Image: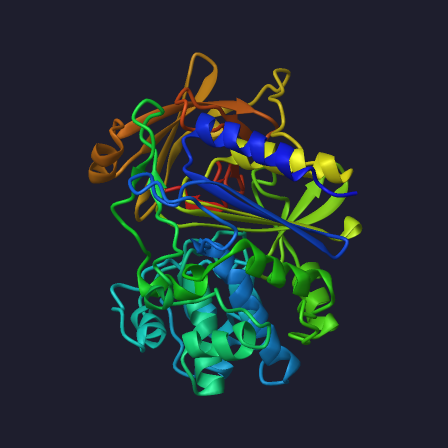
Length: 458
């Protein structure tokens, strides 16, 4: 079965207009067959059309690429996932002595290391990942090593990149080209913005209101510190080349073996639970999210920059992968609608909706009340008239630019003892889920949303 490309294109065009997203490029790999389509414009000011060759920023999808390169080291016997990082970086130190001595590559790959992203300004030079590792000698723990899952946007994968650099004697950017891009025959995938063909690049956009429509982002790229965790740019076809490696026991579309079948199995089967299982999936593997779609396992890798978004879903049981790159968003409901149209065409399993709240739950709300925060994020949970609410405190400059108040209040509707639905009244926001959990001392210790963990501070 194949997808009805004209119908999907028309539906995507409708949804782009509804959501205020300038363009989407979509690729579908199903049973070895590739279908591609693109809708919309690369830039709302120039109105240049997006095509299947348009290059988009992949954001944190980059982590899956870095994980693949790291697993090559495992295949080569140069690194062991469960040996301390200090085995490869002898001077490695953070504030917590136990973490300094015991954190492993596996902790970094699955986001259970708990180290705060306190790496300062490591600059934009070639020694950026070396500097990041040097700069975290005083970095505190967000949570004890291995205690929970908490997403690391830049630091965890920068440490992995530094191990790669030390063991290979080359820079991460060069390693990615030599180990992955060149052997896979990829000509449109890059790790440095200076390498991107500007005549093919999508421009990122932000949306403050549907009336105003999308505006060009003021921040057109992430700092180099995000490189191994967020700076790869690519096309849907080349993202699907990576998907092919994951679906075909480590082999690229051109027949080149990239990593061993054993390492692919390790990447998908080594898992830790995610406190909020609903927004993306219940478990995190090595560079991949594990999803449960109506009892069938799918794998996800996503990414966002400030104005662009990338989605990849793998459904091994039907030998299917769908990639979507956009220059707006992210919007969960948009991605769900587009992917479900395609999955329905293919006759495969579809993506479940977020769960409904359970009005029968009778919770002791005092166990959840408090302030949960990390640098750059503050959530205040309070109870009133038998109902819980969450107040998100925005940075004043961010709030001013987005034309939003610096305190936004959301209702929390219980799904279970630890999980809540957080609907939004803002038409440019989707409902989210939140986990408030770990009642070791009687009250919750952590708040987990959008994969990120925030410890109780008050």
